[in-house]
Amino acid sequence: MTDQPQFTVRNESFTCINCHTFVHPLKNGSCRNHCPECLYSLHLDDKPGDRNAQCGGILEPVAIELHTKKGYQIVHQCKRCGHKTKNKMALDDPGQPDSYTVLLEIMRRQSMQ
Image 1 (cartoon, rainbow, N blue to C red):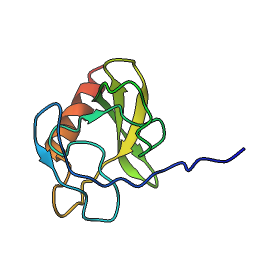
Image 2 (image 1 turned 135 degrees about the vertical axis):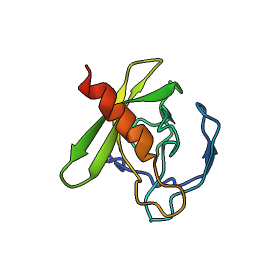
Image 3 (image 1 turned 120 degrees about the vertical axis):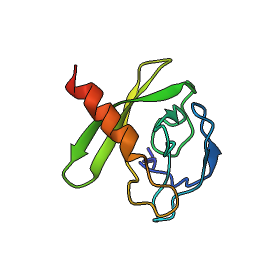
Image 4 (image 1 turned 180 degrees about the horizontal axis):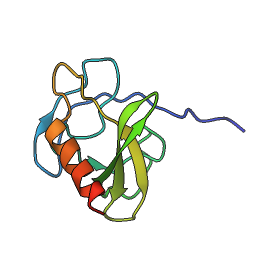
């Protein structure tokens, strides 16, 4: 039995399915998997970067969590299958940093629930 890697590095540009922003790869050495403007993503992976998910649904940013080591993380929920995943925010990317405005809006909605 072979162990599959837990993370496949994919730092590619794409056009956001939600707001149509052209998204550049991260410049800080990590991988971008969500739109920096609206924070939406696509359900493409079973394990980060593997592109094995059969769903292909839209991942909506539904919550923000603060991780002591990873910083702010977006909690995404797939609008098609309900799968939830967490993604580290890229607030410090020099090219296209994630939107503080959207981060705060999601946190505001959370506090009202």
